[in-house]
Image (cartoon, rainbow, N blue to C red; front, side, top):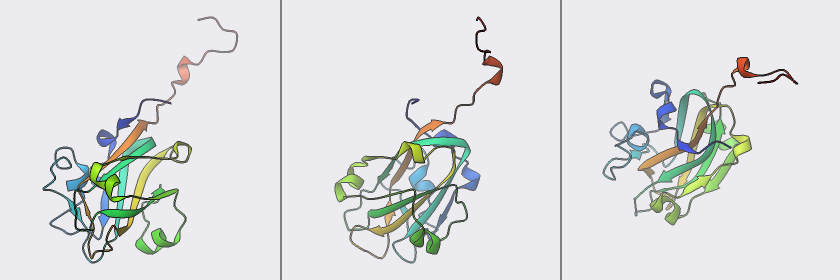
Length: 171
């Protein structure tokens, strides 16, 4: 398995979308380098505590882990997370009803520390779009706040067919 790296440089920013975000607290605050390290900037949900984030990549990637951090101590940190792959048109009702590729619950310590959540690597191959459904917050508050989202893995290395040698061929 190739080394695990932050996939920030492979995000296709023009295709990143977040449903139910407050316009004054957009997803870029949690995803972009520099912004996500500033605890004064955050992504916040708008009408309820759910967020649905579609992160598109410039090429197919293999995902190994995700960090979701919130320094919020008022119960607005994310709790229940569902991850979907290659479903760019997924809406809230489908995200709630469909079986996720992986789902997990974050403890208050997980989100405060920004603990890396390991993903089932075999289920996250050839990912063009990662959809992150934040289903609920820690304290079931009206809104959810996310200070940092970092996605780890590696690019789907391409095989150079011209380098393949026939069986028995000497190099």
